[in-house]
Picture 1 (spheres, each protein chain N blue to C red):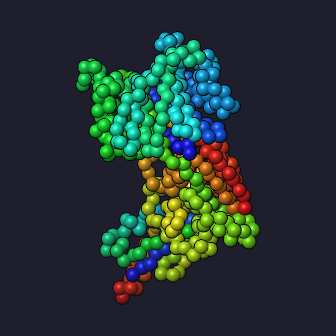
Picture 2: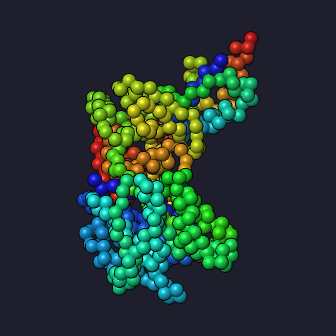
Length: 385
Length: 80
Ligand code: FES
């Protein structure tokens, strides 16, 4: 069984420069998966656009079956180079994992990787081989990964932190490793690793980073599947069938929509308890139902979750919040196979209100959601009722 | 005791049920402690939201001011 990967990334911009954003795209092919990451160099619109272009292009080539080396070569030859620095405007990192959980990672020149082995609770430094790929020297890594392992990738700006200021030579990989080892017992989530390492980096730079610093953390975990139901069926006679399918589904279960939640609760004779917490005033509160991992309001929450997913594709991490939209986005991100069961009954109440407020369109929202999930490498099946 | 159910469904949310909810939290503690609040998914009157149900009676087009009035009224009755 090929393990699934959770990816988290974050950056600090060099003092006085604006952050131009990282980009991420995930490609799935049969039993293989490829994660393409790019980090725009320096500031400015150009770097930002080029990092997005880099991942999109690489993802397209890889999904069409072009081998890794040739993909890197094509990108290296196509993207413009900054005349001043003699560097590409955006870095290119590709991580490839196959069904035997063998990883290959190709990266522009950068510090070594840190691999945290889950079972032994040990962090190790992995040195890559310098290989010329596509006419350019790149670091090439090959190693195996097990469930729970975390891979940490940093840009030069991280080990350089502190140079000439707090520490003569910066904290270096040694310092970073020591820190990772110390934090091992208390940190678990990839987002936490990214945030913590960036925080120390910021402090070592005395809040004024002398270089862009990027951290990526990737965790391997068992793949998951998820079933999401939203909207009661157009034909009421199908309620029963939908609820039965939902009940017997093995995996994570999510309901989006009050009417749908009421229907499931009634058919399956379960209690539905609405929470009263607003952690984000623009997202209606969630509810609780036994045997269901998440119950949210419908269309507003879905649209907010779509915004969150777009952020993730733009290199942002999900905020550690627990509003319905963030929780929904998290459920979707952490599942590999997603089954959407969407009812098309028109809510008579919404219809009555239509002249007063405009409701975002459900079908359109799900169309967009499917597209985003596919860009995140998910296998999505949608069924309309 | 006042049993207050606030509809947090899509329509009522769009019509401002969150404001109703937060106005409860701002009530003086002596009043607040008499109220049990519960969230509801839909009170079947979506075109007249935001809706709340107080001790079994549904009130439409609720505003924070109106809610306080109703609560004071009921509270007064209960004290009398
Ligand atoms: S959503 Fe409040 S009454 Fe229907």
